[in-house]
Structure formats: structure tokens, C-alpha cells
Amino acid sequence: METMEFESILLPGVDAKRPIVIAGPCSAETEEQVMTTAKQLADRGIKIFRAGIWKPRTRPGAFEGGGSEGLKWLQRVQKETGMYTATEVATAKHVSEAIKYGVDMLWIGARTSANPFAVQEIADALIGCNKPILIKNPINPDLDLWIGAIERLYQAGIRKLGVIHRGFSSSDKKIYRNIPQWHIPIELRRRYPTLPMFCDPSHIGGKRELIASISQQSMDMNFDGLIIESHCDPDSAWSDKDQQVTPDILDYIINLLVIRDEQQTTENLSELRKQIDDIDDQLVETIAKRMRISREIGTYKKEHNMQVLQATRYSEILEGRINQAVKFGIEGDCMQKILEAIHEESVRQQIEIINAK
Image (tube, rainbow, N blue to C red; front, side):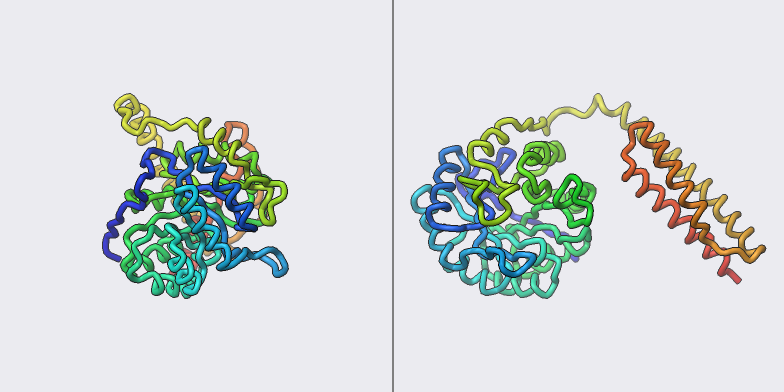
């Protein structure tokens, strides 16, 4: 894919100062609920109002949005508050309807971005469209799939592109609804530094009490903006009530954010960075030594007709090293991922030796 050049997604009158905030209810439930929430948000300086018109639910029977009727309510929001509007689209028909009713910004949801056929259908429907389009990460942690969705829209001529990090689905729901896996959006930013990036703390956290801390983390990682679910009466919301906040609470969260100085000199960090570079060099050398020993083990196993994988031994290493790491203040999950990667490479090298003729 050729180098992608992106145009600004900023709408006229929206301040480029971080964070750019898109806020509104998970679902457009009723005209009264939409207008009440929009007016409260507008009074607190929010310029872009979001609301789900079509809601893809996990199971049938749940509220799936008001459909095209809700687009009329978004038109009223534009007229009476001066706010811009944004909604999710999942089909070509959604795109057509949203454009017909003058929605200012569209986004592609996580379930849709995971399906290249659906993304291509939307991309084809958007040809000639000059509206800002945001793409949520796929539900599974697949960076190439996310980039593929970006490329499909780019090839359709869309240049006002941005992304939304909303976390990744997991069976582990102990803390987050969707695990952040921050390294994935960080790598996306490394590859496409001019691509606008929003964080969706509502879907990452799944609980309103986590929104503030997740928002701060995203600002510390230089995200451009936030998309947060806000409802005039969250406890009565028809969908995802636990992750929505009132406009008052949203205002409090935004005003509490600490925005780091991007222009601050990094000269004072040079010595510390040099130390990290030296340690990284040592890490590579140490892993290389470990792989040399693994190859020697592979030779021994080949000579004695032993199987490569010694599950008991691996479990002992994993448990012992993780416990050791925790004592040094390293998260167990982090250490486990490192050890699993090293073990996978060790096994690969041993298999290579055993299969060599």
C-alpha cells in the first residue's frame, strides 16, 4: 500500500486543542432523551454529539436503536444547539440514510471493521463523500485487520479518516469490558503518525467509574480525542447504562484531565534513554545466549530421540519466573507474554535442529 496522507477531520469551529470530545448517548432512544442530553452537553461546550441510530446487539430482543426516525432527531440537534452530529454505520443503506439526513461524521463499529466484506460495502457507498469517517478497532486484537479497514476506505478516496480505540474483546472481564492492549494503537500511531486517534473509554471500561482514568491514560499517550457515552439519565438508559455518564460528570472528567506539554524538550531524558538503549542491547544478547543453549538442548534431544516439548518443565519455568517478576513490581501478565514469546522461539529452534537432515 502506498504511503497514506490524511486530511484534517476537524469540523469548522471545533478547537484542535486536545482532547477533541465527541459525546452523547449510546442509543438515540426518544426525541426527548436526545434533545435533553444534547442541550446539556452543548451548555458544557461539547461540539460533536454522538448517538447510536442502529445498534448491533449481541443477542436478538435487545433495543437495537430507533432507526431512521432517530436521524430526524439528530437534525433537530443540529438546528437547535448548533452541534455537529455523529453516528455509527454498518451497511451501505445506513450510509445512504445518514448522508441524506445530513449527519456530519460517521464511524464504523468494531464488529463491522472485523469484516472486510462489510467494510468494502461501506467504502463503496462512501465514494465521493467528504465527511470525516472514524474506524473503530476490530473486536479481536488484529492490527493488520484494522489497517486493512483504513486502506479500504482510503482506496475509495476517503481522506478525512481517523480511528477509535475501544479495546479488544476477551473472556477476562475482571477489570475491563474490552481489554485496552495499548501497544496495538501505539504501533498504529508509529506507522501512521498523522492519523487522528480517539479513545473510547466507555467501551474499554464498561463501567462509568473507569472512564476518567482511561481517558487520562489515552491523553498521556497523545491521543487526539475522546468519544464518551453521555446520557441525561444513565441509570434509565435502554442500552449500556453502566458505561454512560451524565453531562455534568463528563464535564468534571474533561476538566480534570492533565494534558502533557507536547513541546517540552526531551534533552533531559537523553541520559535515561541511553541507559534503556544499553539495557535493550544486553537483553538481546542475553536472549541470543539463551537460544544458543536451546539449540544445544535440541541437539541433545535429537541424539536421544526425545520429544521437544517438556510441559512440566515449561510450567515450572513459567510459574517461577512470573512470581519472581511480580516481586520486582512487574505485572504477571506482562512477564507471561514475554516468557511465552521466548519459549515459542526456543521450541521453533529446537524443532529446526531435530528436523535437520
